[in-house]
Length: 223
Ligand code: SAH
Ligand code: DHB
Ligand code: MG
Image 1 (tube, rainbow, N blue to C red):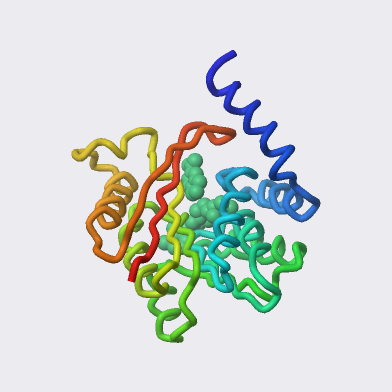
Image 2: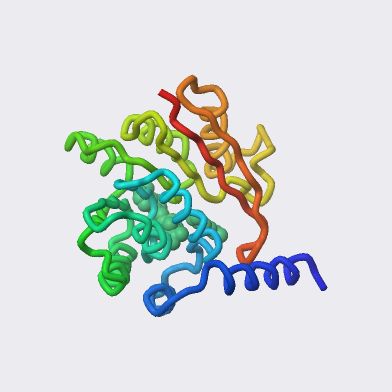
């Protein structure tokens, strides 16, 4: 059995037992695919991890950067109380439209606010509203801007908040200091920021599974 087949089988087993889907999650993936969105959502076990992290945080408010069709948003939104709030930033209006439909079907439209536009424009607008600090920030958009997103996350959180970044392995190229790829450079800059920032304590964990080899970085806001 090849490595990837093995990872897939084990991921499927864990997902079936621990992160079972339901009609809203299935429909979100189905309609995302039908609308031509790329199949790059988090996996079920990863979505469940995000949900558990949000719950562990006692989250009332979550910020997501990179909505796509709202699949990760559904997992995160279900961690929140009925008067909670999830702001999700998405560049592509088509993605946002699909996401809003998926989130409405999942019964989360009251707590989720999908904002369309480049996140680096939406973030200052959001900050101007002086929102309550976000308990968890999930960064999963254009990786070239990862460090800037971590900086914004720092401005929009509190001591004890958690920042999670998706896709930090970049096929292993994250180890290459000379790599010119913007996504690699942005991810390395985010790792450096987490490593060196006095208000952050972080780590990164590699994952295998249905999406192959990848990983998350996690950072706790200290003060
Ligand atoms: N979090 C989703 C996947 C997000 S894929 C999930 O796991 O289900 C990355 C998304 O980021 C895409 O929808 C892409 O359009 C969006 N994106 C890319 N550049 C962006 C930017 N500058 N601002 C906001 N969103 C962006
Ligand atoms: C890819 C995967 C992601 O989770 C993401 O946010 C962006 C791109 C990918 O596999 O290309
Ligand atoms: Mg991702």
